[in-house]
Length: 400
Image 1: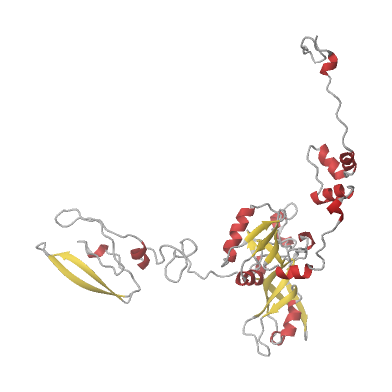
Image 2: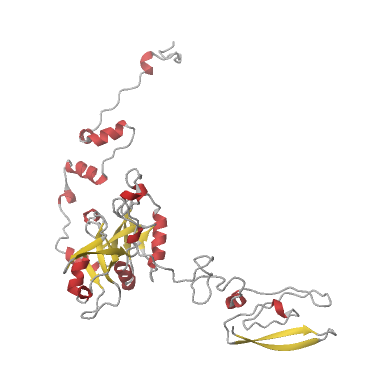
């Protein structure tokens, strides 16, 4: 016998055997949860997705309808001890990466460990997609990180606050970052007193504020340097208007500024990511002139990291002199040796060169790499005379 789909049923099987059994009725508590679903959840389910209910909210709704019994009826009360417990918690920071882009958590942890350069290890914990905890394990690391900043990850700011270990992380308002600013051209009289300088700095950002002034002494620099907390929900301040005998405006520049938009002035994205990203340049009221252009402390050149690689006074590796000039470290860190052929045609084995530049091979003087910047070096050269006899010479090589 064939059913409606054209398929034959096995012998001895009735049509009723092919009909699936009715679904079991859902338990009352599950049914009540289904009735509590909002429009957003229903729309998500219609699209084939999972329920978009926050887990905490869902648990609260479920537990609210339960009849408690036994230990569930008695609260575990720490309210009398909470102040003491908070005092015992130390060196934990709550931070958020202020960006709209996705990123690798592992890459961020690695980069921040390198940037903070801590003496002890740092323990990270993920609290959200872009929300994290970081615990430091010594006071020096804690002070360096919390008093420094702004800290950047891929040019996005890390918004950091101290965490007490007990408060819900969602209750923290992470909306400010510390930034050092330079207010250009401020009159000398406003930079001689801390109180007046702080009033000027408040036009740029919120407290706590730190100003660099010598009380009662004129400022040697052309600007007032101040550390303020920039509110991320407001556009960057570009100038400070001040009226003394007459009204003047004083431009502001920022040190180590994260990515910001030249069109809206907000930190957290760039102009090509603002809206559809199409904004004429003549409509952009902010620009790169707000940033301080720091010059590199290392010499310029073509090597990795700028200039020559490593060398004296450098933290890099490898060659640190001008191209073609040997380095002292090359004769000490590397197994230098020269394979050459003597005047009689015999092959000569490779020998390393010592720290003082001493070579005992029968080699030509021109191929010995002499190390510059030493007061004097004594190099033993063995040359062949016209009669193929060995002639020993001592050469003093002065520093260039």
